[in-house]
Image (cartoon, rainbow, N blue to C red; front, side):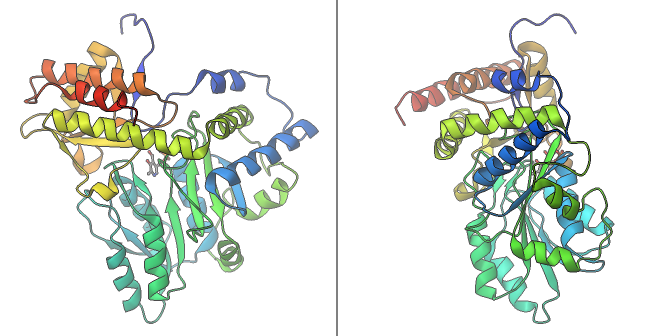
Length: 389
Ligand SMILES: Cc1ncc(COP(=O)(O)O)c(C=O)c1O
């Protein structure tokens, strides 16, 4: 690869751009993870994460990717053969359901077209049919990073309540935490799964669970084998800010700084910023005369936008050209969407001019790749961004 001046544009929907403040915070000497300074750090982080998850309950931090936090959620709460209701909203929901099957769970996977979030009415009907209460948990992905469709978790909760069903509710917030409004306690979520490399503006390497008292009670009865992911020793050691094994100390320094940044900006401002950048991006896509994959405007993702390529044009060829010419990475199509779509990530540490640059790169790339489109997407986005909205 020849020399590249300036900064790479990392516009995949995670990992996201890591702010300089976080990078500097991580570049500090590693300390004794059993010493007093670490205990203070651990306690501060667990408290800060409670604010982000909007919970007064237990939060645990693993040295892992998001996939580890998925596994922790399942193995701590369920027993072999337990039925789990899941929804095919896209690639990540599919991967999570595959994991659940491999762990020996009985997955009822409601088919979907990868262009919608979870339908609360279908969920309610499914649970009403379950007279024997065989379903032990409902697991949904809040923001399907493979499609750019969100599921409305408040409505999911209401659907479960209308059915009067006691199932646990698990929510993957891997690409929504600290980007899209989320309320673990208010929405009665039992386990929320998160990770470091998206809205939290950190490199990959931390997996998160927020845990309700109902989930903690379920963990006492659950019989799936668990060792590394076991909540119990974590929670015991976390009381004093420590971990049962070596934590990812320098990532935790980064987390401390990222939490400070999020609280300085204010979570509501963070959510509004993401919504505004998503709206500007959609205006660009509309002006380009291209199609957004998400069908239902209520489910448009604030953290990424997924764009369908016109028939006969390969999204990965466009992405390759944009990477080579403009040094910008865009998200690839995952699973059955390979080659058919590309994704623009607009989450994490991001501002108007970063979005303007991103959209310029896409518009120039569309032209160079010979994709049929109308010019004017960047102008439409800039008009919106400068309109004071
Ligand atoms: C919604 C969602 N869930 C789960 C995962 C898996 O996380 P990881 O790749 O960190 O294991 C991802 C990764 O992008 C994701 O976007």
